[in-house]
Length: 455
Image (cartoon, rainbow, N blue to C red; front, side, top):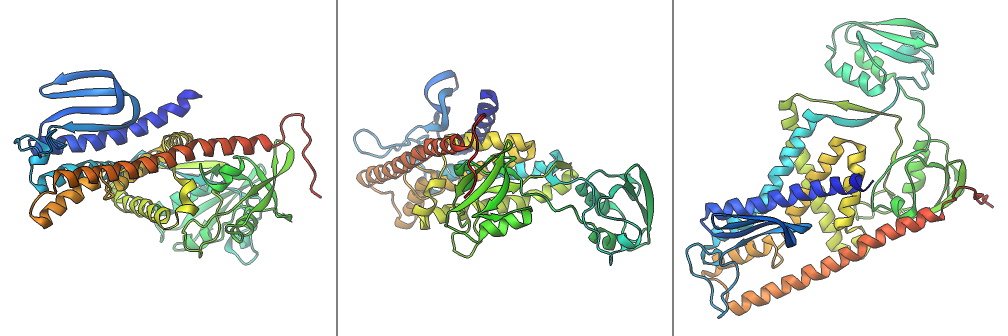
């Protein structure tokens, strides 16, 4: 259990930190700045060695890393370094290049990860190829197909799920006639589909209405905090019976920022959970969400040719960037509303573990997202962050000279105060999120308990 929790976390954090610091390291070497230390982690060294002028370290606390360069802070007498191999002695564009190289390395890594996911395999929710209601006006009905029948072959390819049918259709020539084999009980029959009619027959297919059973629960979202678990069946929302998944979403979405009572069935016991849907867009125009996905009995993994996957990487990375910056903007503009969704190391560990359980592609997407998040955070114009160094470099370009030693130290102190405040908020949120989850789970009926009946 510990390995399933720690290993995904350490791998994600290790990759993100390594590529970020490697970006700074390579850029410093390219600018001929002397690198004194390259450290993965903070605190005492677990392992270290020195090569040329650089000490390479693996430290005990895996929550960050750093590249220590010669002359990256003012001299003890208040003067600025002037040596050829010292960071602060370099022109503004050289320092900006070194500072931006770390976030740029995270961006490139995220793109490469997203580009490889398609070739490795993309997991999508899926349902058995058993048909739902078949309207009497459809071609399937006229061909003898009825509700409950199963499609077992499409265009000569055996299929066992709805997603498998879609994949076959995607590769089946639209103008070519083909056959559909349908099973009913132990017998089968064949439907001949004329050329050019494939899309029409595909539109006739429906699945049995999914029940209101919870699938994935997003870490940190309202359902997670309320104690909702995968496999829970929602029986009612504020006393209104829920029979199908399509009834659940509207019942929840109409209560944005208002508590609703979910009547839940778990392990044969019924009980109530109170959850408050949130507005994910922050504009007051979006339906409320609690952070759950529909349970699907099957998963379908599809692999793409490498060139197709590479093309997929570009828009996928842009979507990640857009999502991360949108989240940052909402946190800044509505801090009281979104502050509880800030996450630190514990949140990353929880989310990494959950995504690893869902599938390797989900885990890789999460790793790419964390790379983008680290890039975006480090580019903020806050002192001590990369964005702060870039801001100082650009300020020097505009003024024609570097700021004074006193101004530089004040700038750094402001940055430390800001980062310290943010760190405290994140470190408080992390354990509170876990405690809230535990308390919510404890309220659910346990073995031997009798669930209360609704009034």
